[in-house]
Image (cartoon, rainbow, N blue to C red; front, side, top):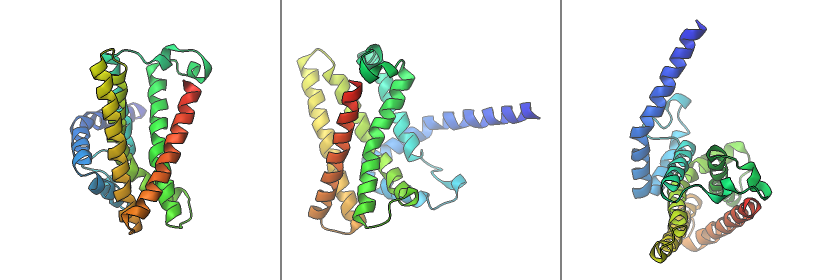
Amino acid sequence: MDFLKLIQSLDELLYEIMSWLVFYPVTLWRTLTRPLKMMDYSEAELGDAADRQYTDTLSPPLFLMLTLVIGHGIELSTVGESAMVTDRTGLSGLISDDSSLILLRVAFFSIFPLMMAARLVLARHVKLDRNTLKAPFYSQCYATAPFAMMVTGASILMRMTATEAMLAGFALLIFALLWFGSLQILWFAQHMRSGHWRAFGHASRAMVEALALFATVSLLFG
């Protein structure tokens, strides 16, 4: 009986993993072309029963994690192993393989949806708890995935020796920051029902806090 349950669990796991081949590109395309609508969609889906959530896309946290896994694979195939894996000084000594590096990057980039979600909850003058934070955090994971993809691409380009590649990487990084920042202004304006200048203030504050925390933690592992 236990063996049959194991087989059934493996069957469901295989189907789930293989379905990512279909729903990852779908989710990526929708997020790139209609990011705000996808963020609204994320919040709406959380109101459904657990077994009916995100049936035609990937869930936002999973989408973010898979994006970072794919980015890491591209990095390995183009510029090789990250120095963080080979370095043994400081906290980077804890990163001994690619799996731990991917988990660290997931934690790093999760800082952005966390800080944006927390800023929105506080700006609404709502009690900050697990329930009020979840919906905006999930929404922000959809926006953060393309941002993480662009930042990863910029990092790969800037690690190349060609001057043109490094300049292209720097340009891509600037574009990623502008794209992500502009999206946050629109998101805050929509959810706070305020003008764009007020939304700009909240988005900028959350962005600065996220970047500061991201940079601080990165230095510990640098």
